[in-house]
Length: 464
Image 1 (tube, rainbow, N blue to C red):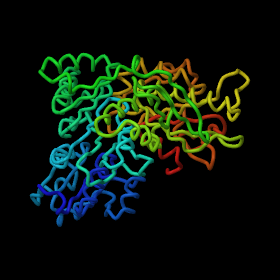
Image 2 (image 1 turned 45 degrees about the vertical axis):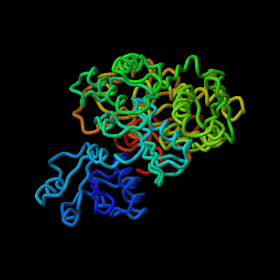
Image 3 (image 1 turned 180 degrees about the vertical axis):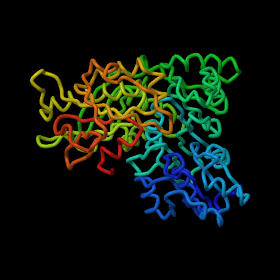
Image 4 (image 1 turned 90 degrees about the vertical axis):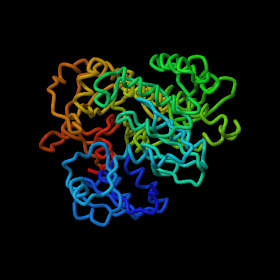
């Protein structure tokens, strides 16, 4: 199927993954349109790029379309799906479309439970002539897509719906694996691990983070399956990553580290996980570019939206406001550890002052994402906020799930949390609101970091 000569309509185009495919196909010459249930910053930007968007879904737009592509969350009951079937339109899920779209590309396919968006964006910065489809907005090229005539494509692969198995990996790059998204694997962690193994076996080369115990086991299985050891590159972070230092440049954080015998590398961002992600990206590019070029290109990375995304710098009159996508305990721990390091750098430059208790003022605003994730990781969630000085908890972002009752006041009691119904950006400050939109408290100093994969990002940015 030649997508590029078709009129393609995307149902659920506001999702980061589907919007990436829409942008990619439009750049190749396809006539692209889309629909979603509500306007967001993504749909507004797509309109600005010349893509026709319908809000909400509307069956009337289907008649003159050649191909329909829909996101994983779209149900058969969707009015546009029903109309597409009535008109015998070609209908593909995003997962099915990927298999065709990526079939002629040399794909550097990155998969993980955590860190895949950052690592994908870092690798895209290292390889500036490659194409890229990422599950987040890279600040380097201000999009989740970079179009290139090069056959090399950096692709963020997704295990949540098994679509990573359709990504045609030239290199299978895996940072970690955890028991996430098991609903797609019959709630069987072994089936998820088997899928990761299949993903690795599809690649001509494999890059693995051997700090992850699951990947250690899969490495053994991969070799036992007959995969050539010479085609596997392993990172042993505790041994290979040394001499990590942190610094500020114009109040922005940078991490510098030594990788194996390759010398020193510097990357925008802060935290051990940042050095790890960068190391995976560097090792993935070693046979594609000279070492010194890799080091230079790494400095072009400017971060990605919603990953330790500094929306407002700290000053005497304004708080530092950070937006982060962390919504799993592992991610929250890493993000808050990085925030603590950032606070110490700011304090060393006398930008951030210690309070009377001699602790740094870090306020974490947590929007839990999915009741099932809370249930499955409850003990870890209750322990993962040690590195903040105050905790604000917002209502659970259900993502379509049925509610589960949790006694948050008791479960998170050690943090003495503040409960708010929502937050609101008020110029340089953040307001905590109750269910009647009355102000509970105004946050106007120190570091304020939002944590979550729901609509907290729009609340922090004053977009709703």
